[in-house]
Image (cartoon, rainbow, N blue to C red; front, top):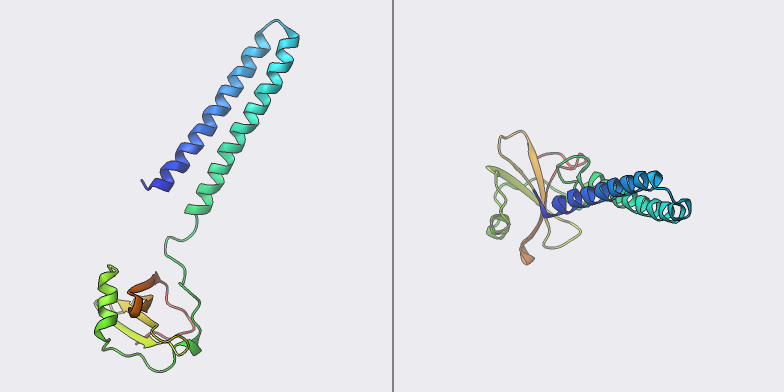
Length: 160
């Protein structure tokens, strides 16, 4: 379990525990005899109940926001066809290969690249394991960084 998921699950459990304590406290207060003490205690328990509900709701919302949707990353930056002109090149320079290796990119049995027309030192790399399903990366060899994996941009035709 990831640390973020652990924190969120813990927050939901804490919020639910606060809710249960508040509900049981309100039930016990309703059984007691003194009406004046019950009125003040009841308001306190309502505040406690609201706080527990708020903690549980925020934790649940955070979890649904963080972990909803497609597991695959979105495109790193919306590349436009004009950014990557020309034909795909299949013999990448060593700096592109080294950047992919140093960033633990796996499953690229075959890959092709296009240099960016807008940003010097940036390359769009499409790689495939099976020859049919392509994965996109933006590669910056000068700083040894990549962005991806991502789905290929539909406006850019695949290498083959």
